[in-house]
Image (cartoon, rainbow, N blue to C red; front, side):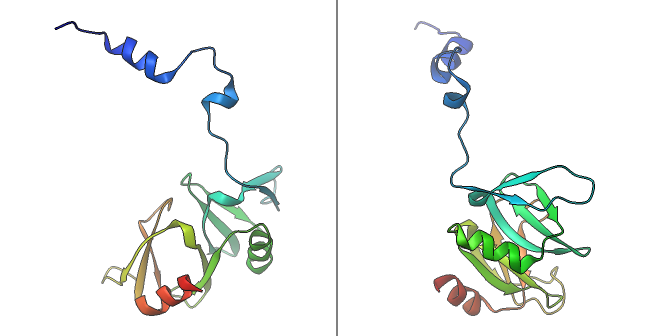
Length: 153
């Protein structure tokens, strides 16, 4: 049996080295929107299709993305949600255990299950989403059935 060096096989799979950058890297799907940057930061543009969740943290609106990055913005959450929805993002409003509004991207939901004991008091369902940075799921006050109904709307 003839052995083929691994690097040669990888080179064949990767394609030509001289490929243009736009051929090597996938481009984000969909439009970008401008975000109000946090104090002292420069311009921020967000790929709408990469949003996982929008919530509040320490007085700011925070956006979780599929790249496991949380992007803060001083923009009001409701205003941001309206702008994202206007571009076609399907965001579902739910309530976190502290009774604050949180929005999840319907197309990033992996599964919905009952809340576990590790969740904050008042949580009744947990939603596993792709791209969360510091946790694997989001606890909400709604029941599994209520979450499923909200996703179906």
